Amino acid sequence: MINLVHFVAATALLPTLIYGQKWHKRDWNVTSSGGSVNITNGLAQTPPMGWSSWNMFGDDINEELIKSTIDAMEKNGLRDAGFVYVNLDDGWQRYKGGRKDHPLEVDPVKFPSGMKALADYAHSKGFKLGIYSGPGDETCAGYTGSEGHAEEDAKLFASWGIDHLKYDSCCSHHTAPKEEVQKVMLDMSQALIATNHSVVFHACHCGWADVWEWAAEEGANQWRIGQDISDDFNYPGNREKYYFDVLDMLDRGNNITQYSGPGHWNDYDMLIVGLNGESKQLVGTGASNLEYRTHFSMWSIVNSPLLIGSDVRNLDAYSLQTLTNKDIIALNQDPLGQPATVQAQVGETQIYAKEMSDKSIAIALLNRGSATADITMSPRRDLTVPFDVYTLKDLWTGKTRGPYDIPFTVEVRPHEAKMYRMYLVEAAAKGT
Ligand code: GAL
Image 1 (cartoon, rainbow, N blue to C red):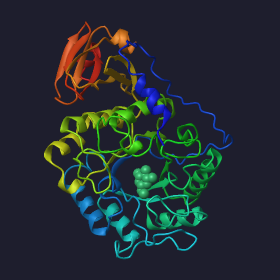
Image 2: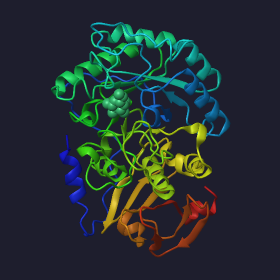
Image 3: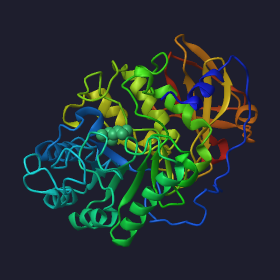
Image 4: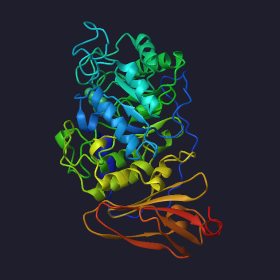
């Protein structure tokens, strides 16, 4: 299950200089082998933000956990920072085993008040509720799936007031031909739209079948670009010959940014910030505070959905500060919806950048290596933008530096990303 794209991307990181790639075009223009469909629910104009139960808890979830998560996110500022989707992943269903043998029902022991009551609770506190199913007879964790019942299940989810569906074909359709995956995803997408209830649709196919090429046309709002993330920043190779770490995911995303934009996003997988190697579900030994911060910065600038995966009821102050940095979140939620691309690469350092809706430039200076490195950024050479005099707002310290009329050099620690917003000096003088 090792993915070729991953290794091609990794070996491309040679100590060469690559400068001045063009901004990618915002108008995505893909032809799918499905061909004729082009539907949209009009949702997720910026990447969905929230929390998902899987990375920390696996299928060990229940009503009390979800309600206390909602309460915690209301109190600790996560909701107000934009994290409003509270998504149940696999394990809410009553039955283990296939749909052929069981109906799709809520587990009455885990969720005694039922799903409608939980959605009402979420809504009353300004959140949205997400749920999980898949097009197979069984889901990945072996619970009853939606095979043959897309319409009925879409109606059921809508009747509960569900706002987000992760529809997971990773296990049931892993080896299925692309056309079959396209069909089952389209069935659910159309069924959701037909309910007239707003449900963000995640077509989760673990980065297979070139899902980014066709899922948007089928009305999907997000799709995973790879297999599951592990709780690692940079594990040598793939843990268990399957999982991707933070740097792997970034590499996978680099060549497919043109498919991501308002309403349809490349999903780099749920966040690992704050897991600290303590997940009940994910493999991995955890990352340092700085590495988690870099992970969050990079997911933000490439416009991945931001779904927190840790136990938000017990977040330490550093993790909370990481997740609620408004300047970093603003990169992710910018209405232009342009994902950052790699503009320059020298040895183990990279410059990611993207244009923002106010014409400023968002920049990440990423040090992937294990030694401190100087990174130099020249607007004209690296970003191909005609900025002669510019200021830089450091998005982690909040301080503005400059104005500069020469290239900017900064020391970047191992696995750190320095994050900046660059303004033309005239614009900065007006305070924009
Ligand atoms: C996997 C998926 C995970 C999680 C899990 C649930 O296929 O990649 O994110 O949803 O299924 O069983």
